[in-house]
Length: 75
Image 1 (cartoon, rainbow, N blue to C red):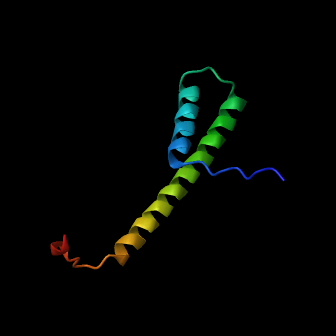
Image 2: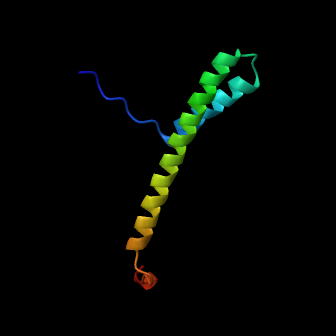
Image 3: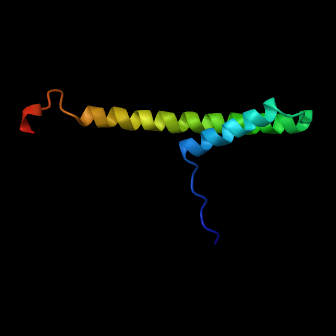
């Protein structure tokens, strides 16, 4: 059984997206290839949005677990 592919990190997703944008901006790519690149870009954007939403939920959960009046005098 082949090893499972690790999910891309947010940073690598953004790097891939930037590379696609640069390719589309600076080349005379045929229309068909441009459409494939655009579709890949949309998938990458959705992936990045999902990662951001997950991170936001995690931060909100962590903040919800912090007492409102943390005693800062203990340090």
